[in-house]
Structures are given as C-alpha cells and as structure tokens.
Length: 387
Picture 1: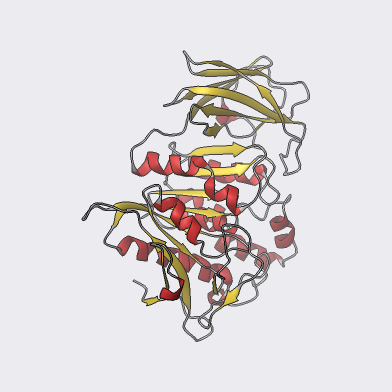
Picture 2 (picture 1 turned 180 degrees about the vertical axis):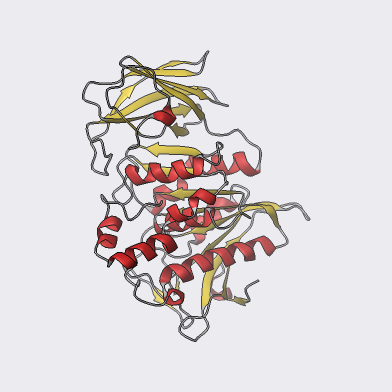
C-alpha cells in the first residue's frame, strides 16, 4: 500500500487532497497528487468507487470526483504528470500548470521517451500510479473493495484500456476516446510511432499498447467515443472493443455522433454512469445489441432493451476505413418494439455503417462498425469485415 501525505491546503467541500507514494524516478522518491471524495452514507455502509484517469493537458479534477460522489460513488482522481491544480482549474483543459518537488517524468509527445530505460518512461510511472491509486482507494473503510471500477479520458482511456487487461480486481472499465492499436496508420499516434526505429516500435507496442493486454481482460467494459474523433478513429477503436467483447458479452459500445473531444463531454456522458450502475448497483443496463443481419438492401438489428427503445439510426459513410474525417450520414431506422428489431435501408453509396439504438433514458448503444462488401445474403455482425 502506498504511503499517503496530507495536502489539506487543497481540500474543498468534502473533497480531500493528498499525495501518495509513487515509484522511484532516477534515484529519487516521487509522489502523486490526488483528490478523493465519497458520498454521504449511513454509518458502516460501504460505497462503490471509481478511479478517474485524466488525459493530456489534464490533472486531478475535483469536479470529476464530485460528479461521481453525487451519484453514490467514492472517487479518486490522480495527477499523472507531477502537477498540482491551480486554484482556477475547472473540468476543462487548463492553460497553466503548477509543478511540485516530488514529480516523476512528464509526458512528452507520443512515447518520445522510448530511448530511456523502461523504468524512466512516463507510461511506466503513469500505469503504476493508476494501479497503486486503485489499491489505495480499495483500502478506505467506506469503500466496497468488490465494487471498484475505472474510467479514463483520451490518454487516460489508453491507460484504462491497458489496465483492464492487467488489473483483474476491477469490476468494470470505461475508456473514453482512448483505445489500443495506436501503431496503426490514420492517427497522430500511428504517425508518431511510425517514425521510430523498428525495434522501438515493437517494444512500444508490446509494453504500452492496450492491444497487448486486452485479450486477457474479462471485465465488462463500456467503450465510448465520437463517430468523428480527431485522435482515435473508429478503425482502431472498434478493434479494441472487439478484443474485450470476445471475452465479455456484457461489454457495450456507444458511438455518439457529434461528440467533441473534451473533458466536459467525456466526463459527463450519461452512458458512463448508467453502465457503472448496471454493473455494481444491479440497475438497468444499456441496450444490448443482438444479431445484425443483412437482408437484401436492408440492415436488421435485433436488440434487448430494459427501457423501451425510442429511436434507431443507421450511420453510413463512403469511407471504408472509418477515419476521423469520415462524412457520416444518419438515416432513421424503423423500430418494431414488439419484437425488439430495428430496420434501415443501406444506401447504395455506403461503404461503412453502424446503427445506434437509443432507449427512453436517451442512452445510446451501438453496433460495431461494419463494411459493405456487396454481400447478397444475410450476414451476422460477427462475420462482417472489420472497419
């Protein structure tokens, strides 16, 4: 268990601040700044909890902790780059960072520290900080250690995806934007990794890409992304989801058209809270996608929804690779609630497509992205070609 050091000058409104012990860096000790809060409960009652992992230009957000406290969860948010929040910091990208004397390495670009010893690389310290933060959170008396999950934004989503295959103590994991297969072309990550020497590319993939670890994950996971994310295209996001879904049918995919790449949108999406509740509070889950069939020119999606489905839309584009600049077009599908089926005609120019099912709570579950190769017989989702 990591040692804890008070930082009460940062305490605010039932959210406490402290440092906890990190791994040694270049022969000296490190400490990790964190915010922690828990909901008001009856004496002796334990709460579920969640680890909150920030992304680039971020830190430990006390507002993020409060969001989860208000929904009945204890929450721990840590800083992964040796910073403490400035007084004006809010749940958005901040223009000013403050360092502290116990900092480990800061993130430099996309794995640009690959030439350093592994124990000096930022990902090594970031992943360790998240795992030890999870251990610390589980140790608190008011936390139910059997109901602890994790969510992360962007780079935090990368780390969450990786941790899902490493830390089987977790009850659930919810990566937002971030995923695996970062070495694939079509993103800034792929471009950066392609510039490394071949041996460094291999080492980076094996050490730090979530695709190395996701095949081992049996956690229920919610994969949440935009249809047009500027950092993590659906081509690699769906492949990451597939690795997890093959082991865990309770996992869900939610692709939100028009969602921006930001902390505000990535932290407050209601699918996150509903999915966590469905795992650790036995509440109603997001819609479950069943068979996806091709019948002539129509796509038929069977689903199971605890709350009635109120809308279904087929999203299609002419870009088979489903890059972040794909021009997705929405077509309304016909819902048949009596047999939980949605049907939409696939336009002639469609190359890639997916369908969203929206339930009465306004929550979205998505099929995986599939490609149209002119099949003339019924196909099921799992036999369609990858995006």
